Amino acid sequence: MRKQIHDNPIDHGRACSLSHGTWRRVGAKLACAGASVLMVGQLLLPSAALAAEWVNVGGTQYDAGTAAGDEAGTWSWDGADDMKLNGYDGTGISAQGNLTIDVAGTNTITADAGQSAIAVKNGNLAITGDGTLNATAQNDVIAASGDGRTGGDVTIDGADVNVTATGGAYESIGIHAAAGDIAIKNGADVHVEAKSNADVFAVLAENVPPRHSAIEGAQAEEADYSAKHGGCIMVDNAKLNATAGNAGGMSVALYSFGIKTETYLKIANGADVSLATGSAGKISAGVWIRVQDGASWIRVNRSNLTAQGDAGADELVGANRKDVYGIFSQSGSPSATPRISFFQSNVVASGSTAAVYAVNMGSFRAPYIKLEGGLKIAIPDGGTVRDTVGSGRVIGVPGSSVIQDIRTSDEVARNVVISSGDAAEPEPTPQPEPTPAPTPQPGGGSGTDVPSVTSTQASSTAAAPKPAAQVAAVQKSAGALAATGDSAATTAAALGIVGASVVGAGFVASKRRDR
Image (cartoon, rainbow, N blue to C red; front, side):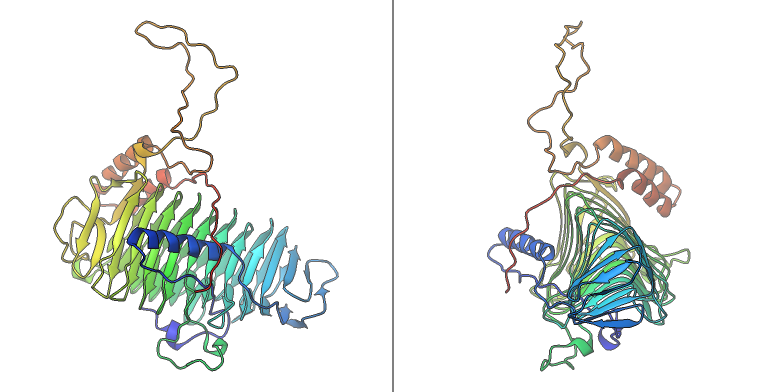
């Protein structure tokens, strides 16, 4: 799909790593649940790696062991793995080894041509604090690379981060982890915009390390050139707004790629994720999770996700339609099972090929698309999960036959809205103090307007999806627009009503285990 990843690795920030457990088939449900908890736990816990051997700030390198900083106090480094920014306004920052950057106030990094705003080689990068970081570069604006075994994770924890990728010669990437994973968590608010005439990826995690970072003695010239970990993305109790602009090849807002591994996208605990793309010559997708020889997995849990693929005004039709998806999961192994699951969440997806599609190129194990926790497909009316030729499943209109060609079939849903509707438990409503006694009314009514609170109402630890009345409004508005053939307006109407934030809650991460 994306040949540059294998054949033309870039010189900086092309890796990110986070080890995760191998799926064990102890039983289908138990294995999936166990692996889910383990993977999320690993993203939340820091991985072992070395402190920075050096940092480079604005073109000047500082070696480990001696603290450094500027007289104005806009940046400081403890000589190990701790850096602080407070009002920094300058060019790029890079490091060899682990680096944690705590941001306070407003900070601006504008990289020189061909450089990253922040790049960490053979280490993990963490951006923390209650400040704001504005980062701009041509490519790999915020990036980390691992050696295939350790390092390479990008974590944004609590901070507000704005990323702009203006476009390099071959591609444009906003946040990039090669041979590692990306985690956005704990109230972080992240905005990413990437644009280019070539391939564009707003957020990219892969398990392919740069050749110069390969493990010493390993088979560096192996054709697939991959690590056993990396390629996973998690947004937990945080916000992510990512946009990939028009592109000559691929335009993908959130892209996860793996070889000989399992990769996943986890959106959980009240996360609010909005993904949009521009038109592209080949592929346009809000979410694109792809594994060449392993399983790909997408899980949205008590959160909001909107994902839009844009074919552009010159969209082709029928058999010539481009690959344009809202949410796409692809595995490529006879033993792999691509998964897409939604639990008590609001999901809006659109794509002129398919809104939600999972496929196993190994063609042995069929994928699954699951709606859990009382979720219903509001658009299309009566929508359901349909089988497709070639070990695939797609959300489509009512029916039970196998869809022969998702590109040409009118039974494939290209605009999808999923919500809990009536099945959602409402948020607790506080009782007045004291509660007025009911006054008898004619016909048996009560003289108070105080709503009752039952034991079945949601606790403060659960996100509350939108009520059925709002979903009905979406369906009515979208249906009217669909009658005019305006699919873009249909999606916009759905996004406007269903795409609001959901109140989130924390969760307990499992202890990390090496496999």
